[in-house]
Length: 295
Image 1 (tube, rainbow, N blue to C red):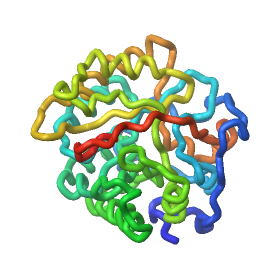
Image 2 (spheres, rainbow, N blue to C red; image 1 turned 180 degrees about the horizontal axis):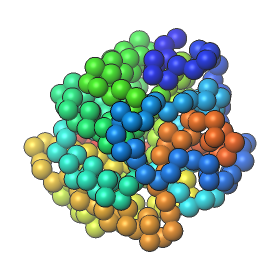
Image 3 (cartoon, rainbow, N blue to C red; image 1 turned 90 degrees about the horizontal axis):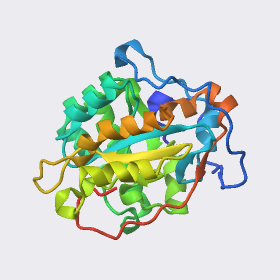
């Protein structure tokens, strides 16, 4: 078994799968012990988040889509596979509001945009694994799926992810399966999906607008929601709707009494005492598309 080196704990992560089924674990535990709703000022001044092995293993066996809590907190995440077109705007928007985020990058993106990886890490945000080439995992062999995860991990490290790298994986297109989750867990990664996608990735050609992206995020607000957005634009487009929508989304989160938390807090021993697990909740499957990223 391979465990991401930056998150090696006192003992190797077990191959045993720890299921986290909805209804079996308490919901609504307080999150007051989590990290503050502000990113680190610089990666160099903040060492790697200490990982509580029990916290990590508790996430195994599930497509984790919502944080189990009754507190009005949300997590903000971004996927990146196409390009870094919207990154300047996104990092500026997060920085102005001191809001943390987790960026799930493909290895191919990391190879092509190494400076972007370093900038995300330097801004204090977390970095997650989104496979190397963003394939449909069901079309691959088990060996092929493992190669995708390992290659992405290598690319992120080579690009300078450093201590910002997390043991979090997000499936391309959010296309999960119990067997595939088990394979990812065996490599030392927890699957982190999302409660709702703004669909800003579709762009104006796909019928989306900034207003609609904001509305989808606002409508999805609930305690523990995990919001998914995207960094770049596909097919030569320059309109990154999620970058434009982000300030309005963060303002709406604040206006409704929510705060943004850092997903990495769920890996610490403090979080173990306050929020025992993420729970799996169903999310609608997006129809198969010819776009290179999607979810």
